[in-house]
Image 1 (cartoon, rainbow, N blue to C red):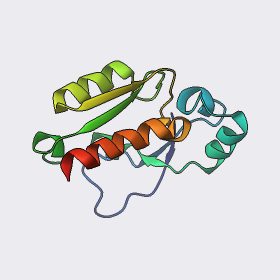
Image 2 (image 1 turned 180 degrees about the vertical axis):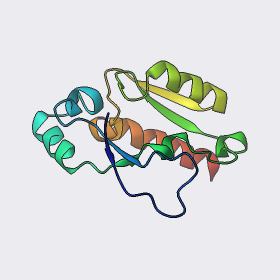
Image 3 (image 1 turned 180 degrees about the horizontal axis):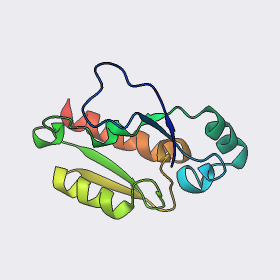
Image 4 (image 1 turned 90 degrees about the vertical axis):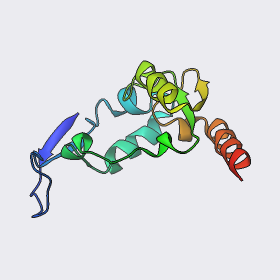
Length: 127
């Protein structure tokens, strides 16, 4: 993760370090999207939007999974959120899980059919 300072807005949460986070473009494919073609990941790396480093530590309130059913797709080659962590989160939420072997963090791009099936399963189960 590469960080760059940004000006903090007046309503920034206490303790926000005022940093935007980026994935180093030289490591982008390896870290974020190893199962996509290099031509596509070069464009993704160049066009990536920053994420607030402070926002990663912010509180979100009561999680929806405590009162709503959930579905989860775990990409087993994710190098952003380790699959073991995702399995823990999915189990804690009581999610209906599908694991996708060899898929990266952007499983919705590399294996869209699997993700669509999981979305449709959620739709059919909750309508």
